[in-house]
Image (cartoon, rainbow, N blue to C red; front, side, top):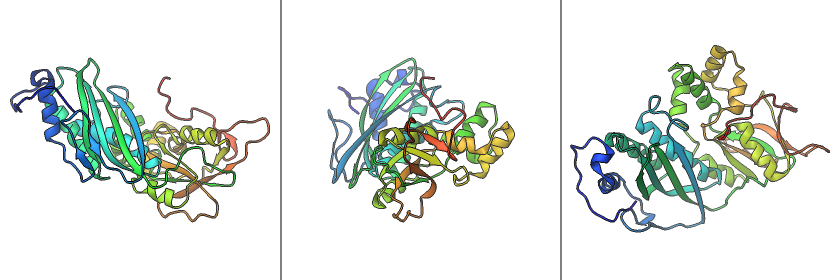
Length: 327
């Protein structure tokens, strides 16, 4: 995060426009801790970090009213979620995040205190994996937008295109909770607490990416848009079909509560709900699954005349497969 001028911190200002660009940059950078991997952090033209394995990079953008709502979530919760969405991508490659850059496009009347809490949330989530915020940018915008780029490293990367016929499909982390929470909030409910809080702040299984890679995972992806939709990416990239067992997928009690209240089958949230940032992967049948991974299906050959896709109990899923950003 850089600016071509100085500024002093003024605790009396209330909005971003009162603080100004350089004051905002200074305020954010003062709140950022560092790690041993960071040689040069915020304040120069670019950051300098050390990496020991393969470099992995990912970027996500969160837009107000589309990816989060300030009347549903605190700034701290939005910060946690913004960081988690990116850290999860590195996790899905079997890697570990090292550094993040943060770009903010904010309305001038946004309270500075909101930015303070956003940054606190981002830093808190980064500390879970030992990563640091090393730079970024700020600008004015009518729509509050948060863009995060994460940099990490991996000893062995796991891509989407390695699933083989006969592999076991497994998941790590929770599924359906965030989707159930979104459904509850959309109808004006603030409970069950476990579901609503999962939508506000996801809890990716940060240790499971590395454990899956070490166990020999052949393909891996994080579940951001729904298990069916995200595993479809693996199926297409690998040229296979994936068949899930509805009896094997884990269902949280809060998901059951929301499903019963809304007249939906609980498994629909597990299969199509996004924003949990769980992991889904395929493993050779002879590979012992780590304790944090649970089998939920198998990889099968594409039948003649068919195409790579995901089925449930041997049948096509009747309904939407998950979130689609331009729908």
